[in-house]
Image (cartoon, rainbow, N blue to C red; front, side, top):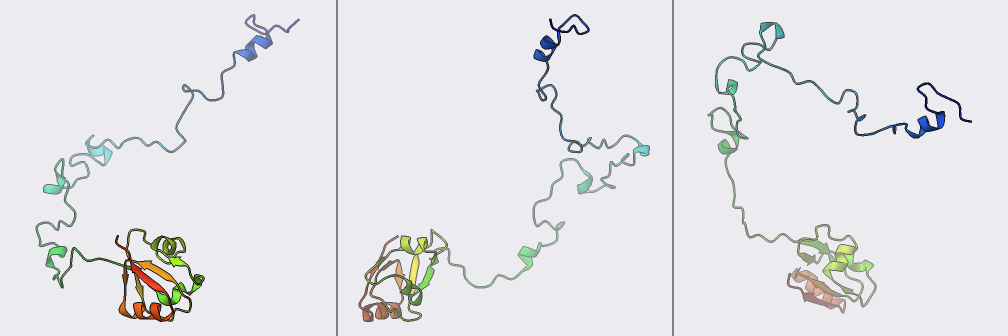
Length: 169
């Protein structure tokens, strides 16, 4: 027979009704993660009475104040004082460049495409069009597809026996 426990229940029944270690009613935030809100304007003894830490008068002491980025109190802001120089073309095409010398890693007869160049890590940005420049010598016969070629790159590719094709984006 099971041993009697105080309250008239047996030990076996008491274990069956034990609460789990964690439940919604026992959850608490970690120690030190919650801070009490500082209550300002509660008298001079609280150190934050009267002006509630906002100082005296002026726009910054008012409720709802927020200044825009770069605002210098009505003074001409720095970004407007600095002289503007040059012309910035909004329609400029920025190419990722690959030199011919780098393409010598591909075996002869291979078709080099923009996707292949990206896969091999020659080009970092996936959205930029690719331009092949004529720096170095091409030692293998390749069929190169790119968005643009320099004149010297075209000459060196044809001298090596390869072909080039301009790809549209």
